[in-house]
Figure (tube, rainbow, N blue to C red):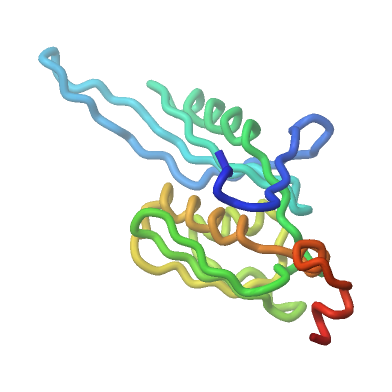
Length: 174
């Protein structure tokens, strides 16, 4: 699922204390010759609030089953995000479909300055201080995926040093 990203660390859900956050539930209608058939789709973000997060989509005829399916789907694609002292290592932009998300590290005590779907993802990751701006589409599905796009591009200093083949000190001092 995350083939286009380098150095993405996938995580198995076993042994993790995962908390799920409901991002949104939509009632969908299928019109048939016998009338309208109603169903529900739910998008959920799960995370252990210390760098591991995943998202999932569930569809069913009733809300509770849709949410349960979404949680199961989210547990199947967990990833690890590098965090530094409760924030992200550097600013990053992400996009998916018509949604664009910009996230930026913030100093301690700032809190999570984010709205809706972006907030759900960042809180599930375990980020405590961050600034963000969501632009373009406000469709929760696309905003969640755009936020994941931004988070998956984040690299910590050790990873950058390893990729460049230089010391950690040289990354910072040039």
